[in-house]
Figure (cartoon, helix red, strand yellow):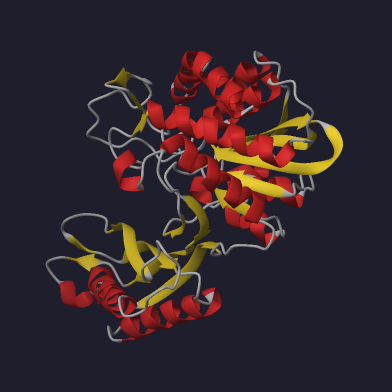
Length: 408
């Protein structure tokens, strides 16, 4: 049966690549997050395979309050005989804007030297293709199967997933027994970091640059806060996670805005920070510490006040009991197809998968892609996917589904 699955995937691989190209060619930059058109296109392509996609538009008011434009999540349900597991496969279609420096069109889906280029080609429109064609291969066997497969294609990972998988789960539209989510092909990820994102508004008092003593420089206050935050990074390096693949906590300030003109003492500066939390940390304690560091730094600059707003709190993912059959099958078939051991590991990223785990659904992360995020150029110019990784990962997932759902 495994040989038949592999042969079907090889015979239909050109179609799989064309499917991925079509998905890459519809932009899903988030922000602005106008992603309903991509869901519509995905549903249209799936219909061509005989897969009916249930469309679940998130209410417009909720989407706009979240800072997005439009969002429709998709579920494809493939039921088989009673008495088996329901296995869900989740990939997200939203992605950060392309930025500068591309040598291949960010929405081109261009193929050069066995690599497909484009934003989201690796993370994670690739696994729209991996999972769709793995299920098609499975069903081509016409073998007795028990349980069901669900494809979850969602559009909110970049903003935390609460309007993607979180919305589907809260509205009781799905409750699978196992969850496989988009990932890379050379390891099975069973744990990941948490993430705290915060917005810090530093208030001073505007003044003419010729008489700066009449104002309070918000930027100098922001510098004091930045220095205090970056000092924390040196402390984080002394904390080590016990999870393979995860090192230590760290903090990044990714955005700074402020001032009105060159000749004006800035009265307001806004910082946005990202604090990655290892699985062993307590998120409430982490947030309280960050808030105290900021308050103490602001207090060192007379006249400076701050407002602190939490933007995102994503809990870490830890392995749940019951994920063993999924993980074992992925490792077994990964080694058979790739010709090398496929270890389990953690990742410093945070993902939507935590939302399934918080509902008690055992999960793992595996899909098409290279050994590291860096190799894929994800979130950088010239993001790409090695097509041979796509082919082989599709075989691994198809074989795994057969093991989990076969009525042998």
